[in-house]
Amino acid sequence: MQLTVACLLVLVGVGLLIAGFCVAPVGIIDSSILVAFGEVCTFAGALFGVDYHYRKIQS
Image 1 (cartoon, rainbow, N blue to C red):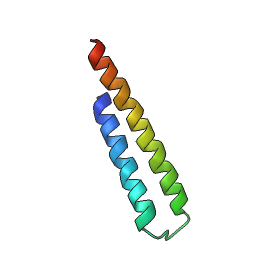
Image 2 (image 1 turned 90 degrees about the horizontal axis):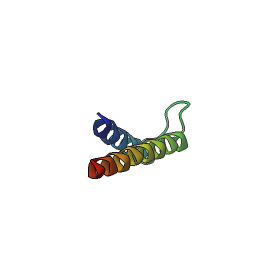
Image 3 (image 1 turned 135 degrees about the horizontal axis):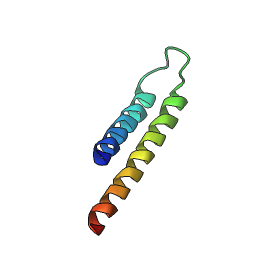
Image 4 (image 1 turned 180 degrees about the vertical axis):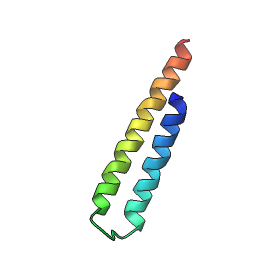
């Protein structure tokens, strides 16, 4: 479950990072908000992945 959430967060974060650079904002959401949220999702996914990796090694 944890690995699935980590992969999902990384994919969503990377997708939002790409969208922040490619899509012009058509409403209230500015591209800087998309980029910031994408970075947070990617970082959270990376932390989950690192934790999963080291738990797997120790067991």
